[in-house]
Length: 68
Image 1: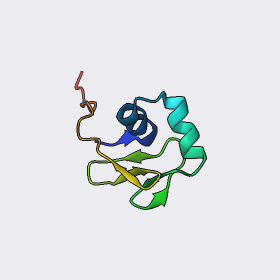
Image 2: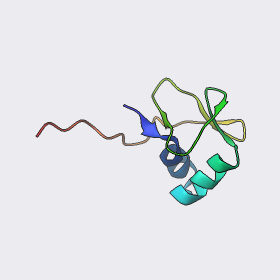
Image 3: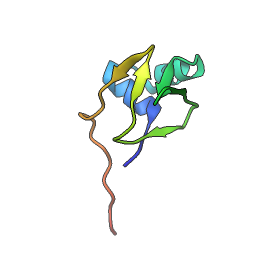
Image 4: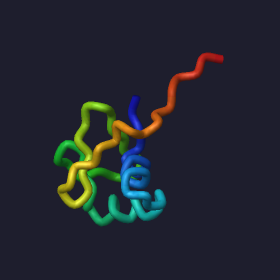
């Protein structure tokens, strides 16, 4: 399951999502070495980094699919 990169950064560093989006706009956030845009997503096999420091996001509670 993929999650927005801003959520990963916000939850890992205890930032607001707006702060995380500011870092994305500044070009400080990468996924697999490529700069991301607002709204981009990352999956379990991706490497997310802020200022070239990898972020572990395995602890996040990822949404599950619901069948209604």
